[in-house]
Length: 87
Image (cartoon, rainbow, N blue to C red):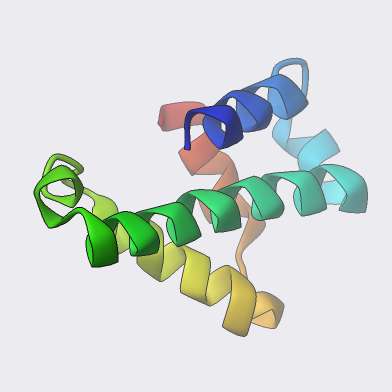
């Protein structure tokens, strides 16, 4: 999870929303790392419930992963970018 978070930060460190929104490559990179984060939390939930409980937004992160994977055509780039900037 830490590596995925670091990779997201690295990929977007010099980017603006305008660049992110128009770059399929950057969007793909961010979506992939968010998917990895969500999937990792699914596995933590299934295998180490006490550790899972230490992540207050775990269910939201898993939900985001599900939207990216299953509802990719409805992903709002503004939502993902706000997560990049704020989290």
